[in-house]
Each structure stands twice: as structure tokens, then as C-alpha cells.
Length: 213
Picture 1 (cartoon, one colour):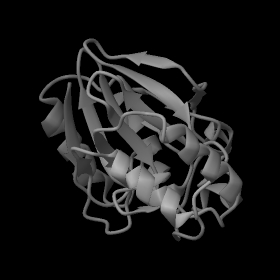
Picture 2 (cartoon, helix red, strand yellow):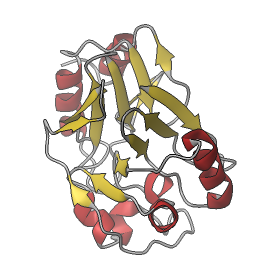
Picture 3 (cartoon, helix red, strand yellow):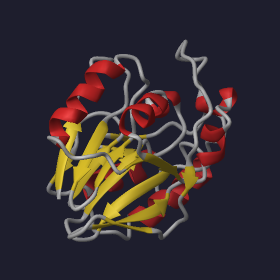
Picture 4 (spheres, helix red, strand yellow):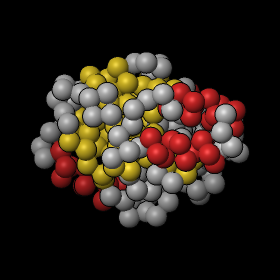
């Protein structure tokens, strides 16, 4: 499994990760501002391969705004957790696209359930429901490399906000309780730098920020 960080020129964009194994998966798409450059970077990393699917960690515009353009370009399927409904109907209140002065069209997104295994060959990504930042936030965990793609649940040096529509501090605490029981060597968050070597430290720091449990 090879992981590429797809660069965006937009400062507030989410991190975008391309996973290449026997199958290829893009995690989050950014806002869609500057899609041409992002799509070119994806093409370069794919090096002639097709893009099989996009998985969205949650429904906020800075993570999903580029989805329709990527589906149109690569002809791939799209998946999300419990936030899939908000994305399908381009819900303005929860996706926050108006807050980013953006536009969002409905998209065909299939819903992933907690515990779903996404087989990419030598590696298997397990879907973990991690609500709190939004009601349907998910993380993806590779048990082979102990890597976690955490969206906006936990960052290298912080945690996601819980004061926006569908967010919940109690849900976030429960999500951190769940993550505290997982061996996380590498953390690939939705924003900011990744944490290599001991991603559990980021989880422990997040628990401290919430006052423990």
C-alpha cells in the first residue's frame, strides 16, 4: 500500500490522501476550489491507473466540495458514513457550503456501516464510526500498518470542533474512548501534518483537551 498526500493550493482545504494497493482509494476531495490542479496531481500519482472509489470522512464542504468533479473525471464510486444523506441532498446547514461561499450539488454517495472492511489487496481498511465533529463522521483503520485516517476527529495536535450542526461533545468523547483502545502508529488527519510513529499520543492529547473521561 502506497499513500500519497495530494496537494491543494487552497489554504483551508482538507488533506486529501490517495491510497494505492490492488485497488485505489481517494480519502476526501477538498473544497473543489482549484480542482484542476488537484485532479492533475491525482492523475500523476495514479500513473495510468483508474481511481476506484472516493471515501469521505464527513460532510463538510472543505472535504466534499470537489466530489462531483472527481466523480465526473474518474467515473468512480463515492462512499461516506452516516453523513451520506447530507451529501446526497447537499444539505446547506450541515455541509456548511454557504459558509465557504461555495456551491454544492447533490451527489450519489453510498453509505458505509461501522465495521465495514474495504479490501484493497494486502491491506484492509476498517470503517470506524467516530461521530462528534459531525453525526456521521468516520475514520478508516488499516490493521496491517496500524494507520488511522481520522478526518476531523483527531489531529496531530488537537481535536475537531463539536459546536457546528450535528456535532456533539458527548459523541466526541465516546469516539475518543473507542480510538483509545486501538493501536495507532501513524495518524493521517483531515487537516495539518500527519503523525508518524505514535499516533496514540495524538489521541491521548485529545482526551486531555476534553478533560478526560
